[in-house]
Amino acid sequence: MSVTYNNNDGKVIIDKEVIKKIAGYGAKECYGLVGMASKNKATGIVELLSLFDSNRGINVQIEDDLVYIELFVIVQYGTKISVVANNLIEKVKYDVEMQTGLKVKKISVNIQGVRVSK
Image (tube, rainbow, N blue to C red; front, side, top):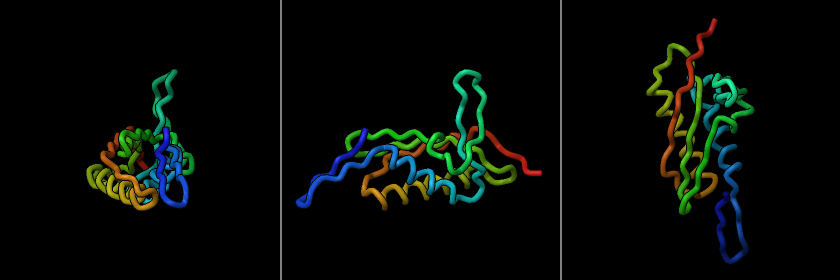
């Protein structure tokens, strides 16, 4: 699904894959985030994705020109999860709204795991 803008100069179409990319780039700048997560449908095991493959850990829905984003992440052990989640929400919302002009209605952060560093 995509969003279409019409103005005097023409038409702009923003695909939800673009919104996923913007959200992924914004998320990877947040402190405490190890990476995005993806659940293997066959085994049910959660795997850590590279930050460069971040759009696989993001779901985007567009309804009535409002954007709903769901993030699946793995955080670093020792960080306060609520602070990391709030930073993710604020950063992703700001980036998507500023770059697309769309209104982000809701962002859900799903913590799929915690990574302990050596």
